Amino acid sequence: MSRDRRKGRTMRSIDLRLAGSALLLAVIYSAACHADEGGTVVKQGLQAKLEYCKTCHGLSGQGYLGYFPMPRLAGQQPEYIEAQLRAFIERRRTNPIMFNVAHVLSPSMLTALATHFRGLNPKPFGGAPRGSISTGKKIYDEGLPEANVPACSACHGMDGKGQNEIPRLAGQLYPYTVGQLTSWKTVRGQGSTADTSAIMAPTAHNLTRSQVEAVAAYVSYLQ
Amino acid sequence: MHKARKLDVMKRIWLKIAILAIVGSTVSAWAGEGESPGVRNCTWCHGTSGQGYMVAPRLAGQRPQYIESQLRSFAEHTRDNPFSKQYMWDAVAALRPHEARDLAIYFATLTPKAANDGDRDLAARGRTIYIEGIPESNIVSCYACHGPNAEGVRDIPRLGGLAYFYLKGRLEQWGKGYHSGAASPMPLVASHLGPKEVEALASYLSFVK
Image (cartoon, rainbow over all chains, first blue to last red; front, side):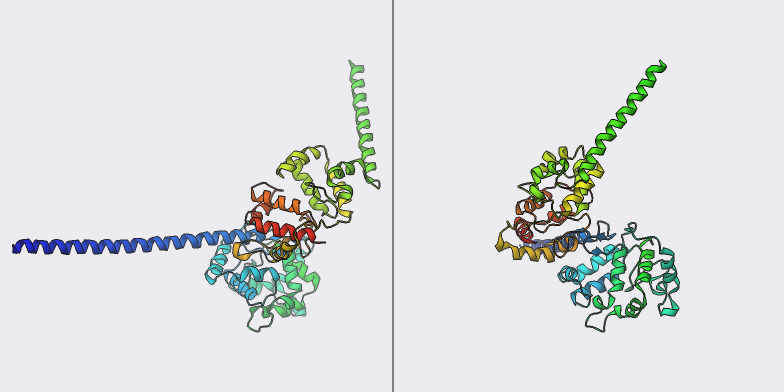
């Protein structure tokens, strides 16, 4: 009798333990499934968003010439891309198209996009006039001390790859760079003092139009 | 033997002169004012003064580089939607590059008239999509490439004032996987547009002057 009862109790506890571990497994499994689902959704969302970005910025992020020049994003510093997307959202950087594009991006999407473009390395878009490239190189490497223009290379690097929030200029579209440098004050750092773009304002102001064109042509061919 | 060869050479020279004369006369006809025979071949379908008719789009006021690139894409069979295949592939088969350029320049100089044939109630929605896209649905802004007034630039076409039927048809065809010139982003762009967005965009654009 008592042996039977003991046996029954053992069986029951084994049952319970089995049921317990089955439940645990089920919980772990379903959690794993959910995590995986979440991962796929995020991945699909990222892929679709990347396709969206590249429709305008070029299929390999090399930039594109629409009615407006769409800048190269390939190889760009992620910190710079994130900072600019935030500037569009907060309207510190004026751009009617990019405000709409940027304000729907979640912070994690913003980071994922910036990281993706960092890894692309297509050939420069090309097409810039070649006549003033050597003048551009001289300004880029040495600056124009008499006009208070520091060497671009001091911050953007000798190879034009940039660092952190300082953008890569290598391979950037010529009309884009010209457009930015000639309208710096009306586009960047709007209504805010907390904007790194202020660093470039005096330099952009001190460059003449032809000097801007020379520098823009030079950097557009850097690989 | 010697004489025969000489005759042969003479014949070839005469043939060359004859060809040059024919080509020369067509070119001068092109350069002349009014509708040349080449232009008349186009306006037969594209309407008097190139304002478009039915499935044939308006050519008047179109970007010359765009017209040229499309004529090339018909010749190379890269623009492959049904009407292009049915009409334009044969129509451009004998067209030489300089003739294509002359035609493009001629039609670009004609003043375009807006078709005004879309749904007025959809125009406001269409304008919003044109300018902003729908970022939440990954629909890109049209304005970034086609310009603030849908006027186009270089080989990016003017869309303002084209017929509703034509605009709707093109957007639907891209969504179905037909091609345009090589490297055109339009098949990708249009694949994200639903029927409501297509109708709104085509309506808005038909009214743009």
